[in-house]
Image (cartoon, rainbow, N blue to C red; front, side, top):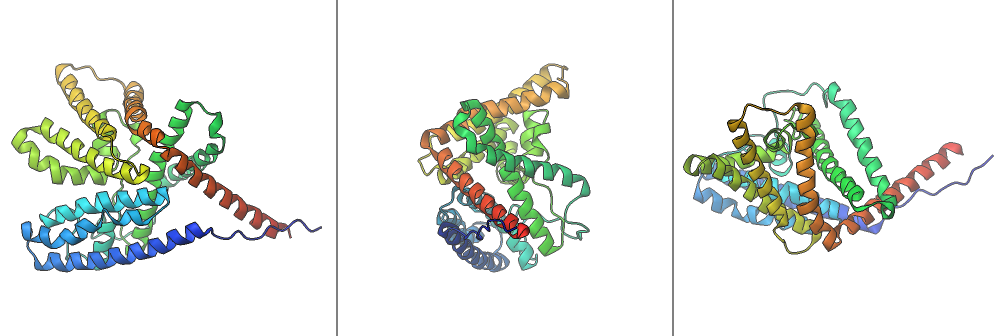
Amino acid sequence: MHHHQYPWPKLPPSILTELKCSIIVSFVLTAGMCYVRFATIHTPPGFRRFIALLPVISLLPVLPAAFSFIHLRTIAAIFLSWLALLKLLLLSIGKGPLDPSQSFLVFLFTATLPVKFQLGHRKSSLISISEVPLLSLKTLVLICNIYLYRYHPLYDMYTLLSLYTCHLYLGIELAMTLTGVIASIIINMPIEPQFNNPFLATSLRDFWSRRWNIMLSQTLRQLVYDPVAPRLGPAIGLITSFLVSGLMHEVIFYYLASTRPTGEVMSFFLLQGLGIIVEHIVKRATTWRPHKIIARPMTIGFVMISAFWLVFDPLLRTGADERVLEECMGVITFLEDVARAVLSKIRN
């Protein structure tokens, strides 16, 4: 008995265009980092090195605009206009993870990707066996999360915002993890983890300093907190670090929503910094410490509620969430067509 045979789906022209853009951007980045490495070797840290690196530093915020897909544009903005730019600024003063004595591939990947290699080590496996179940679960949850968007007209606002929060967190973490695994395979070196189960945070300081986007925290500490805190105090250093982070996030949200910044995203990060200061004051004033069972939902609840108010509201007003949903629906439709084609081949 012959079943109806589904044809293999063709890649949409828009995806082919994005693939071409990815190749061009990768070529430009590789050429730019060749220049950066050469200029760094021949220029001592300081103002002269900063001027030498300025052409590439100026180029990084422009490259994400080459992508039309919101997901790709946002990821490129995080990788290039944010992390890579901060790494080059650190390199200009002789700090950070970049070192021109590194092999070119290590230098290139460290500069352009959210990775930090554990130099001197050799990787025995792609990923720790203990991490596989949790990463698999996160991947499954993200897939289910995206699939649930199909029924988004049925959801109330808070259910939809909860799905957006899950999508944002898992999307960023898995994108960085996958990038790190690929880079680790090529270089054959382990990398430092970028996330440490932020949903287990017991305080805002724990969340932002030790669990969420660890590389960014380390970079901001070196570039902002360490120079400011000894002169103006730890509180000012902390607030300044969150101010810079907020400004960088405003840039990211410009790529995401394609509208002028409103300052709400920056206000979100300033609020987190103030929350950490309040936590510190309370801990110094009392010996009471909430149990983890209470501290964890309090911490994540504060982050999520303030994000609903100051992060997602601007996206809803601009309609950026609708464009994200359209891209997700397109991916789901394409994957379903591939699944039907595979099943029809198996049956026949």
